[in-house]
Length: 226
Image (cartoon, rainbow, N blue to C red; front, top):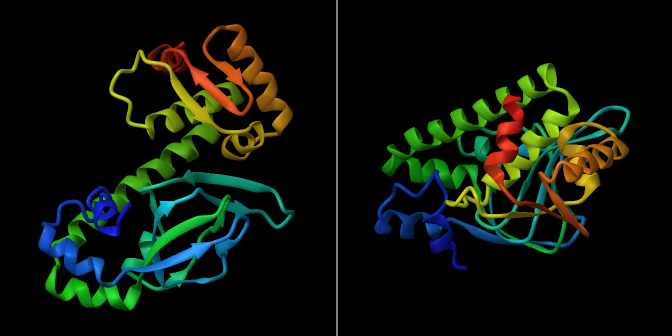
């Protein structure tokens, strides 16, 4: 997939016309990351914005005791580090390549030059940042008010919704391990395995190796209202 075709799908840039996209395409560079390579750490300066062209990224935080809380898993077409487009500040999380990954990168200073001629993009960036803040608020609410079972269901629903499947009654496949789920939900792997087993008994999910199948996404969502 070319950088131009990817930019057309990225929310920050998809309101630009083809001429503008061709201009911003010129200031992106390409970066290759090996499996298990850190793209940046929590203490690094945030001066670059990234788009995933190929591969898989984990965004996470780590406590002083070494406990990991995964914030998101990103794949082709996803982006991260958007705050670096507006200001250079310390990173707030770690970014790790889970497999060999290809990224497109734009530097803060290059984007600032582009903004001089295209200030309208600031509105789109603001909307994107607001969306991320709303998601952060939802995560805080999830940990404050919901039990592990509900948090797990929320997590599965969120991963399924990322696939943008129009038919909500169609089975959804999520390639994710129990360990990855435990880091997303914020609990022990054993607790996740037990809760997945319960959801399987209720026929809300099926499990095949590292793939979780949701036969009916709407039915699973409705369990949150029980």
